[in-house]
Image (cartoon, rainbow over all chains, first blue to last red; front, side, top):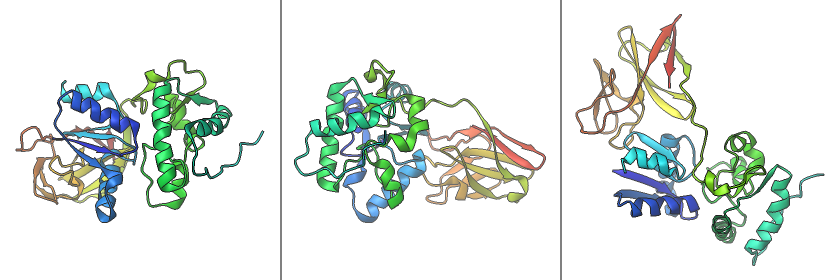
Length: 80
Length: 216
């Protein structure tokens, strides 16, 4: 399952979401800034652990972690 | 000429106000607004939302950690804090600003960093790990699980592909590590697991003069 970590305020996150939708990719999205309390802390910590930072969007597909709206890399990783 | 002091933006601030303030500021740093005006307006619209809710204009693509000193580095424009990183990709993180020599800013959308070539890094002393032990090491942004079985060392991605548990903290049984969170098992020699499509990447390891090196 593809996982998208995003912020509601982030233009690149919106572009990534639209791209995944347009390509018909099934994914689970976590809008980190809309979480609260411990749930938010856990999500931020998870993003930091998988991507090494707190920049968004972060797409996790299998073992690939793609930071930013890198369309070419997303396409290659997902085989679309 | 000194940079203008930061000021708090007042309620009713518009996109044009942000542009008027930010333009001269980033020009002194060798940057300008991206030529993709639609994108620029979308970013600044997001920043106005953040101004409304947070009291200042923050990078809309990054979330601020729980560290007040770090927070300052996420204020927009954040270029002074990341001159080296942004200089390499010729734009700021969001792409709101690009280097002055960039003609078509939209071509940089999605550029995050220059992909590094393979590099070999010392990650531990061989004596740090006893037979059957593992640990997590960091190489750049990668978390790597390092294991010792007898006199052999193995390195693989630290992320279990079930729920991204830390394999470096797992339990080693011969050549198999069991994820400490839910028990998924991986062969440390090749990263293979019984779960379809969930094998993890391994990295070459070399021991020289009692030091362990991993190539990523």
